[in-house]
Length: 292
View 1: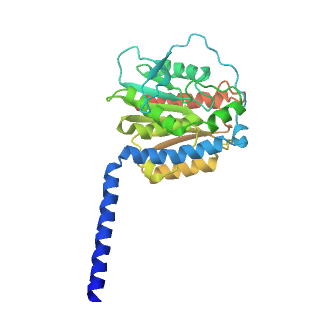
View 2: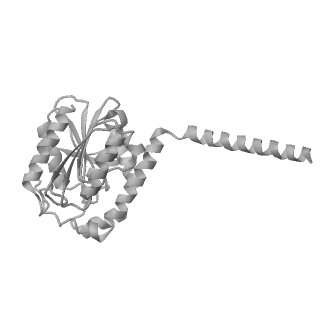
């Protein structure tokens, strides 16, 4: 009987050792980038679910047609890890520069308003390459319903690949900054996280903040965010939580709040708040220059 118990004990020890060794082998194969991307999908999928609801669509009013006069950039393509090229509106710096501003669209797509915003940042920042990425692969929505359909059908894995491809396109010695609105505000922060040590500053105009502390701890740059007290996505309570989470993660976050609703900084938005938008823009430019 003792021999039987001894044999069972030996077998259990052997099985435990094999299991532990297998887990360690898998862990060694998982890179930091894989872990960050896994965290990314939690937030991105949550946003996709929210943006697929009619309540979220109701926060967005059909945008006005933006002017296309004298746009400074041109459309380019760049390689992406999924073997499908991605597109972007690109304005190269007049002088050679390793500074790059990645601009991320609202949920409408890479429309003329975003291209105009990219032009504006390019003019006011000076020695900076500006790259406004096309997250919808050429699709643009003109109504809340069509934007909601695009969001429902969006492939978040593809979007992560597009951002990573844009980061790769900037070059190994690039200093990367990011700015985005709503959908793009969320992506501005995610871009900074994915850029790792290349990230030098992130600007969020509203947008879903990251709530995972482990992920926020990987952030390697300061963040500035502009939010509306009348907004419900994100709500003031969500912004409060974001501030607490960033503090807990040991990261620097500067927030500014306005008596305005969702999309207050979009000049093509019928509910555009010119005063709040101008103040936020000046603060965003000052932030980016201070971190240059």
